[in-house]
Amino acid sequence: MIQVQELERQIAGVQKSVDNKIRMQISIFMGGIALVVGLAGFIAYKKFEKELEEVKKIKEEATKDKNVVSEVKNQAEKELSNMKERINKEMQNDKAPNEQSPELQKDIKTYVKKTTKSIEEYTADDWFFLGYDAQMKEKHEDACFYYRKATEIKPNYAEVYYNWGTVLFHLAQLKSDPALFEESCDKYQKAVENKPNFAEAYTNWGAALLKLALLKSDPARFEESIIKYKEAIRIKPDHANAYNNWGYTLLQLFKLRNNLDSRKQEEIEALLLKANEIRKETGSYNLACLYALTGKDGKACQYLEEDLKNNQGIRGRDFIENDVGFTTLKESPRFRQLLDKYFPPEES
Image (tube, rainbow, N blue to C red; front, side):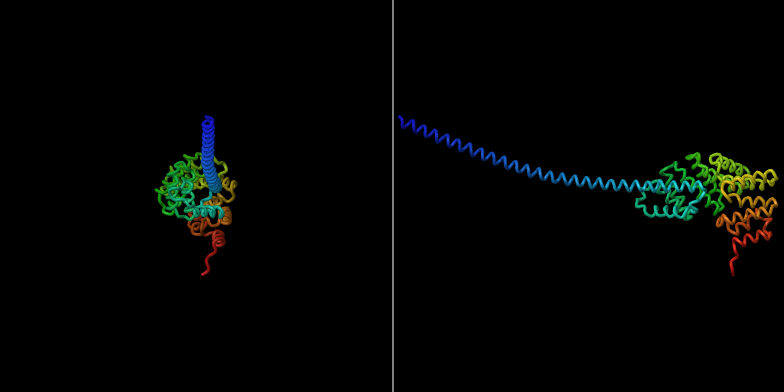
Protein backbone atom coordinates (compact mmCIF):
# COMPACT_ATOMS: atom_id res chain seq x y z
CA MET A 1 0.00 0.00 0.00
CA ILE A 2 2.83 2.32 0.90
CA GLN A 3 4.55 1.52 -2.36
CA VAL A 4 1.43 2.44 -4.31
CA GLN A 5 1.13 5.79 -2.54
CA GLU A 6 4.80 6.50 -3.15
CA LEU A 7 4.37 5.63 -6.79
CA GLU A 8 1.37 7.97 -7.05
CA ARG A 9 3.42 10.79 -5.47
CA GLN A 10 6.22 10.20 -7.93
CA ILE A 11 3.77 10.19 -10.83
CA ALA A 12 2.19 13.41 -9.54
CA GLY A 13 5.63 14.97 -9.22
CA VAL A 14 6.56 13.95 -12.74
CA GLN A 15 3.23 15.34 -14.02
CA LYS A 16 3.86 18.62 -12.25
CA SER A 17 7.35 18.82 -13.65
CA VAL A 18 6.03 18.14 -17.13
CA ASP A 19 3.35 20.81 -16.70
CA ASN A 20 5.95 23.29 -15.51
CA LYS A 21 8.17 22.56 -18.49
CA ILE A 22 5.22 22.93 -20.88
CA ARG A 23 4.29 26.26 -19.32
CA MET A 24 7.90 27.36 -19.52
CA GLN A 25 8.11 26.41 -23.20
CA ILE A 26 4.85 28.18 -23.89
CA SER A 27 6.16 31.29 -22.10
CA ILE A 28 9.39 31.14 -24.06
CA PHE A 29 7.43 30.66 -27.29
CA MET A 30 5.08 33.54 -26.53
CA GLY A 31 8.01 35.70 -25.55
CA GLY A 32 9.65 34.86 -28.85
CA ILE A 33 6.51 35.78 -30.71
CA ALA A 34 6.29 39.05 -28.79
CA LEU A 35 9.94 39.76 -29.57
CA VAL A 36 9.42 39.08 -33.27
CA VAL A 37 6.30 41.23 -33.34
CA GLY A 38 8.06 43.97 -31.41
CA LEU A 39 11.09 43.84 -33.69
CA ALA A 40 8.87 43.99 -36.77
CA GLY A 41 7.05 46.95 -35.29
CA PHE A 42 10.35 48.67 -34.50
CA ILE A 43 11.58 48.12 -38.06
CA ALA A 44 8.28 49.41 -39.45
CA TYR A 45 8.48 52.45 -37.17
CA LYS A 46 12.03 53.20 -38.29
CA LYS A 47 10.97 52.93 -41.93
CA PHE A 48 8.01 55.23 -41.27
CA GLU A 49 10.28 57.68 -39.46
CA LYS A 50 12.67 57.74 -42.44
CA GLU A 51 9.83 58.30 -44.90
CA LEU A 52 8.47 61.06 -42.67
CA GLU A 53 11.85 62.80 -42.74
CA GLU A 54 11.89 62.57 -46.52
CA VAL A 55 8.39 64.05 -46.69
CA LYS A 56 9.51 66.88 -44.40
CA LYS A 57 12.51 67.57 -46.64
CA ILE A 58 10.30 67.62 -49.74
CA LYS A 59 7.92 69.99 -47.99
CA GLU A 60 10.79 72.27 -46.96
CA GLU A 61 12.15 72.32 -50.53
CA ALA A 62 8.67 73.04 -51.88
CA THR A 63 8.29 75.89 -49.39
CA LYS A 64 11.65 77.30 -50.46
CA ASP A 65 10.67 77.04 -54.13
CA LYS A 66 7.34 78.67 -53.39
CA ASN A 67 9.10 81.52 -51.58
CA VAL A 68 11.50 81.97 -54.50
CA VAL A 69 8.61 82.02 -56.99
CA SER A 70 6.72 84.46 -54.78
CA GLU A 71 9.78 86.69 -54.51
CA VAL A 72 10.32 86.65 -58.28
CA LYS A 73 6.63 87.41 -58.84
CA ASN A 74 6.70 90.29 -56.34
CA GLN A 75 9.83 91.69 -57.97
CA ALA A 76 8.25 91.47 -61.43
CA GLU A 77 5.09 93.20 -60.18
CA LYS A 78 7.23 95.90 -58.57
CA GLU A 79 9.14 96.48 -61.82
CA LEU A 80 5.87 96.56 -63.76
CA SER A 81 4.34 99.07 -61.36
CA ASN A 82 7.48 101.21 -61.52
CA MET A 83 7.42 101.25 -65.32
CA LYS A 84 3.74 102.22 -65.40
CA GLU A 85 4.43 105.10 -62.99
CA ARG A 86 7.29 106.32 -65.19
CA ILE A 87 5.12 106.11 -68.30
CA ASN A 88 2.32 108.05 -66.58
CA LYS A 89 4.85 110.71 -65.55
CA GLU A 90 6.03 111.03 -69.16
CA MET A 91 2.40 111.29 -70.31
CA GLN A 92 1.88 114.16 -67.88
CA ASN A 93 4.86 115.89 -69.51
CA ASP A 94 3.13 115.48 -72.89
CA LYS A 95 5.78 113.11 -74.20
CA ALA A 96 4.85 110.55 -76.84
CA PRO A 97 6.28 107.01 -76.51
CA ASN A 98 9.08 107.71 -79.00
CA GLU A 99 10.01 110.82 -76.98
CA GLN A 100 10.53 108.92 -73.72
CA SER A 101 13.89 108.81 -71.98
CA PRO A 102 16.33 106.24 -73.44
CA GLU A 103 16.33 104.40 -70.09
CA LEU A 104 12.55 103.95 -70.08
CA GLN A 105 12.49 102.89 -73.72
CA LYS A 106 15.20 100.32 -72.98
CA ASP A 107 13.33 98.97 -69.94
CA ILE A 108 10.10 98.56 -71.91
CA LYS A 109 11.89 96.76 -74.75
CA THR A 110 13.62 94.47 -72.23
CA TYR A 111 10.31 93.66 -70.51
CA VAL A 112 8.65 92.82 -73.82
CA LYS A 113 11.55 90.61 -74.92
CA LYS A 114 12.00 88.64 -71.70
CA THR A 115 8.38 87.61 -71.14
CA THR A 116 8.02 83.82 -71.27
CA LYS A 117 4.24 83.69 -70.95
CA SER A 118 2.03 82.02 -73.50
CA ILE A 119 -0.41 84.34 -75.28
CA GLU A 120 -3.27 82.85 -73.25
CA GLU A 121 -1.53 84.06 -70.06
CA TYR A 122 -1.04 87.67 -71.23
CA THR A 123 -2.54 90.30 -68.94
CA ALA A 124 -3.88 93.69 -70.00
CA ASP A 125 -0.54 95.17 -68.89
CA ASP A 126 1.38 92.74 -71.10
CA TRP A 127 -0.64 93.81 -74.14
CA PHE A 128 -0.24 97.46 -73.11
CA PHE A 129 3.55 97.21 -73.06
CA LEU A 130 3.56 95.39 -76.40
CA GLY A 131 1.48 98.24 -77.81
CA TYR A 132 3.72 100.84 -76.22
CA ASP A 133 6.82 99.17 -77.66
CA ALA A 134 5.22 99.07 -81.12
CA GLN A 135 4.23 102.72 -80.75
CA MET A 136 7.83 103.67 -79.90
CA LYS A 137 8.88 101.94 -83.13
CA GLU A 138 6.09 103.78 -85.01
CA LYS A 139 4.45 100.48 -85.94
CA HIS A 140 1.02 102.05 -85.72
CA GLU A 141 -1.14 99.15 -86.92
CA ASP A 142 0.60 96.71 -84.55
CA ALA A 143 0.14 99.12 -81.66
CA CYS A 144 -3.60 99.40 -82.39
CA PHE A 145 -3.92 95.61 -82.38
CA TYR A 146 -2.13 95.27 -79.02
CA TYR A 147 -4.13 98.09 -77.42
CA ARG A 148 -7.36 96.46 -78.59
CA LYS A 149 -6.29 93.20 -76.93
CA ALA A 150 -5.54 95.08 -73.70
CA THR A 151 -9.00 96.65 -73.57
CA GLU A 152 -10.66 93.29 -74.26
CA ILE A 153 -9.19 92.11 -70.95
CA LYS A 154 -9.52 95.41 -69.08
CA PRO A 155 -12.26 97.56 -70.66
CA ASN A 156 -11.65 100.49 -68.27
CA TYR A 157 -7.91 100.88 -68.99
CA ALA A 158 -7.75 104.68 -69.52
CA GLU A 159 -4.03 104.84 -70.37
CA VAL A 160 -4.50 102.28 -73.14
CA TYR A 161 -7.33 104.28 -74.70
CA TYR A 162 -5.19 107.42 -74.48
CA ASN A 163 -2.23 105.85 -76.29
CA TRP A 164 -4.52 104.13 -78.76
CA GLY A 165 -6.05 107.52 -79.56
CA THR A 166 -2.57 108.97 -80.08
CA VAL A 167 -1.62 106.17 -82.50
CA LEU A 168 -4.80 106.76 -84.49
CA PHE A 169 -4.08 110.51 -84.47
CA HIS A 170 -0.67 109.94 -86.08
CA LEU A 171 -2.13 107.51 -88.60
CA ALA A 172 -4.80 110.08 -89.47
CA GLN A 173 -2.12 112.72 -90.00
CA LEU A 174 -0.13 110.43 -92.28
CA LYS A 175 -3.20 109.61 -94.35
CA SER A 176 -5.13 112.90 -93.94
CA ASP A 177 -8.07 110.66 -93.06
CA PRO A 178 -11.01 112.29 -91.21
CA ALA A 179 -12.38 108.86 -90.23
CA LEU A 180 -9.18 108.07 -88.31
CA PHE A 181 -9.36 111.43 -86.53
CA GLU A 182 -12.93 110.53 -85.55
CA GLU A 183 -11.70 107.18 -84.19
CA SER A 184 -8.98 109.00 -82.30
CA CYS A 185 -11.61 111.24 -80.68
CA ASP A 186 -13.59 108.14 -79.66
CA LYS A 187 -10.56 106.70 -77.87
CA TYR A 188 -9.82 109.95 -76.03
CA GLN A 189 -13.45 110.06 -74.96
CA LYS A 190 -13.11 106.52 -73.59
CA ALA A 191 -9.98 107.59 -71.73
CA VAL A 192 -11.71 110.45 -69.91
CA GLU A 193 -14.82 108.38 -69.23
CA ASN A 194 -12.64 105.95 -67.28
CA LYS A 195 -10.34 108.61 -65.83
CA PRO A 196 -12.25 111.91 -65.56
CA ASN A 197 -9.21 113.94 -64.43
CA PHE A 198 -7.09 112.90 -67.43
CA ALA A 199 -6.02 116.39 -68.58
CA GLU A 200 -3.65 115.12 -71.27
CA ALA A 201 -6.46 113.11 -72.88
CA TYR A 202 -8.65 116.23 -73.04
CA THR A 203 -5.82 118.18 -74.67
CA ASN A 204 -5.19 115.51 -77.30
CA TRP A 205 -8.91 115.16 -77.88
CA GLY A 206 -9.00 118.89 -78.56
CA ALA A 207 -6.08 118.52 -81.00
CA ALA A 208 -7.91 115.76 -82.91
CA LEU A 209 -11.05 117.92 -83.11
CA LEU A 210 -8.91 120.79 -84.41
CA LYS A 211 -7.55 118.58 -87.20
CA LEU A 212 -11.12 117.68 -88.16
CA ALA A 213 -12.05 121.37 -88.08
CA LEU A 214 -9.17 122.24 -90.42
CA LEU A 215 -9.89 119.37 -92.82
CA LYS A 216 -13.57 120.25 -93.03
CA SER A 217 -13.34 124.03 -92.44
CA ASP A 218 -15.91 123.46 -89.71
CA PRO A 219 -16.22 126.30 -87.14
CA ALA A 220 -18.27 124.06 -84.82
CA ARG A 221 -15.34 121.66 -84.47
CA PHE A 222 -13.07 124.59 -83.57
CA GLU A 223 -15.44 125.46 -80.74
CA GLU A 224 -15.57 121.83 -79.55
CA SER A 225 -11.79 121.76 -79.55
CA ILE A 226 -11.59 124.87 -77.35
CA ILE A 227 -14.02 123.30 -74.85
CA LYS A 228 -11.63 120.36 -74.43
CA TYR A 229 -8.66 122.67 -73.80
CA LYS A 230 -10.61 124.60 -71.20
CA GLU A 231 -11.50 121.35 -69.43
CA ALA A 232 -7.85 120.25 -69.49
CA ILE A 233 -6.80 123.56 -67.89
CA ARG A 234 -9.58 123.31 -65.29
CA ILE A 235 -8.13 119.94 -64.25
CA LYS A 236 -4.50 120.97 -64.63
CA PRO A 237 -4.01 124.76 -64.50
CA ASP A 238 -0.32 124.49 -65.42
CA HIS A 239 -0.92 122.46 -68.59
CA ALA A 240 1.30 124.32 -71.06
CA ASN A 241 0.24 122.36 -74.13
CA ALA A 242 -3.43 123.10 -73.50
CA TYR A 243 -2.74 126.87 -73.49
CA ASN A 244 -0.59 126.57 -76.62
CA ASN A 245 -3.20 124.50 -78.48
CA TRP A 246 -6.00 126.81 -77.38
CA GLY A 247 -4.10 129.83 -78.72
CA TYR A 248 -3.32 128.06 -81.99
CA THR A 249 -6.95 126.96 -82.40
CA LEU A 250 -8.20 130.53 -81.95
CA LEU A 251 -5.62 131.73 -84.47
CA GLN A 252 -6.86 129.23 -87.06
CA LEU A 253 -10.52 129.99 -86.31
CA PHE A 254 -10.07 133.74 -86.69
CA LYS A 255 -8.10 133.21 -89.90
CA LEU A 256 -10.97 131.06 -91.22
CA ARG A 257 -13.47 133.78 -90.32
CA ASN A 258 -11.09 136.48 -91.56
CA ASN A 259 -11.61 138.56 -88.43
CA LEU A 260 -8.26 138.57 -86.64
CA ASP A 261 -8.71 141.99 -85.02
CA SER A 262 -6.47 143.51 -82.34
CA ARG A 263 -8.61 142.25 -79.44
CA LYS A 264 -8.45 138.68 -80.70
CA GLN A 265 -4.73 139.04 -81.33
CA GLU A 266 -4.26 140.00 -77.68
CA GLU A 267 -6.33 137.01 -76.52
CA ILE A 268 -4.23 134.61 -78.59
CA GLU A 269 -0.98 136.27 -77.54
CA ALA A 270 -1.92 135.97 -73.84
CA LEU A 271 -2.62 132.24 -74.18
CA LEU A 272 0.65 131.54 -76.00
CA LEU A 273 2.71 133.63 -73.59
CA LYS A 274 1.05 131.74 -70.71
CA ALA A 275 2.17 128.47 -72.32
CA ASN A 276 5.74 129.81 -72.48
CA GLU A 277 5.55 131.00 -68.89
CA ILE A 278 4.63 127.49 -67.70
CA ARG A 279 7.12 125.68 -69.91
CA LYS A 280 9.68 127.64 -71.86
CA GLU A 281 9.38 127.65 -75.66
CA THR A 282 6.07 125.71 -75.69
CA GLY A 283 4.22 128.53 -77.46
CA SER A 284 7.16 130.12 -79.29
CA TYR A 285 6.42 128.71 -82.75
CA ASN A 286 2.79 129.81 -82.68
CA LEU A 287 3.80 133.22 -81.34
CA ALA A 288 6.13 133.53 -84.34
CA CYS A 289 3.19 132.71 -86.64
CA LEU A 290 0.92 135.22 -84.88
CA TYR A 291 3.46 138.04 -85.13
CA ALA A 292 4.21 137.22 -88.79
CA LEU A 293 0.49 137.34 -89.64
CA THR A 294 0.10 140.68 -87.87
CA GLY A 295 3.13 142.31 -89.52
CA LYS A 296 5.49 142.19 -86.53
CA ASP A 297 8.40 140.63 -88.40
CA GLY A 298 11.04 141.35 -85.76
CA LYS A 299 9.10 139.55 -83.03
CA ALA A 300 8.20 136.77 -85.44
CA CYS A 301 11.87 136.03 -86.15
CA GLN A 302 12.74 136.36 -82.45
CA TYR A 303 10.26 133.67 -81.40
CA LEU A 304 11.01 131.50 -84.41
CA GLU A 305 14.68 131.40 -83.44
CA GLU A 306 13.72 130.63 -79.85
CA ASP A 307 11.71 127.66 -81.09
CA LEU A 308 14.41 126.45 -83.50
CA LYS A 309 17.06 126.65 -80.80
CA ASN A 310 15.12 124.71 -78.17
CA ASN A 311 12.79 122.44 -80.12
CA GLN A 312 15.14 121.03 -82.72
CA GLY A 313 13.89 117.97 -84.54
CA ILE A 314 10.20 118.72 -84.06
CA ARG A 315 9.77 120.63 -87.34
CA GLY A 316 11.84 120.43 -90.50
CA ARG A 317 12.83 123.19 -92.89
CA ASP A 318 10.21 122.22 -95.49
CA PHE A 319 7.45 122.35 -92.86
CA ILE A 320 8.44 125.88 -91.81
CA GLU A 321 8.91 127.18 -95.35
CA ASN A 322 5.49 125.85 -96.37
CA ASP A 323 3.67 127.13 -93.28
CA VAL A 324 1.16 129.74 -94.50
CA GLY A 325 1.74 131.57 -91.24
CA PHE A 326 5.11 132.68 -92.57
CA THR A 327 3.99 133.70 -96.07
CA THR A 328 4.86 137.35 -95.44
CA LEU A 329 8.30 136.40 -94.06
CA LYS A 330 9.50 134.19 -96.90
CA GLU A 331 11.47 136.97 -98.57
CA SER A 332 12.83 138.36 -95.31
CA PRO A 333 16.67 138.10 -95.15
CA ARG A 334 16.56 137.33 -91.44
CA PHE A 335 14.03 134.53 -91.97
CA ARG A 336 16.29 132.98 -94.64
CA GLN A 337 19.32 133.36 -92.37
CA LEU A 338 17.54 131.54 -89.55
CA LEU A 339 16.63 128.64 -91.79
CA ASP A 340 20.17 128.39 -93.14
CA LYS A 341 21.58 128.57 -89.62
CA TYR A 342 19.47 125.73 -88.20
CA PHE A 343 19.07 123.79 -91.46
CA PRO A 344 22.37 124.28 -93.31
CA PRO A 345 22.09 123.64 -97.06
CA GLU A 346 23.70 120.36 -98.05
CA GLU A 347 27.00 120.74 -99.88
CA SER A 348 26.85 119.51 -103.46
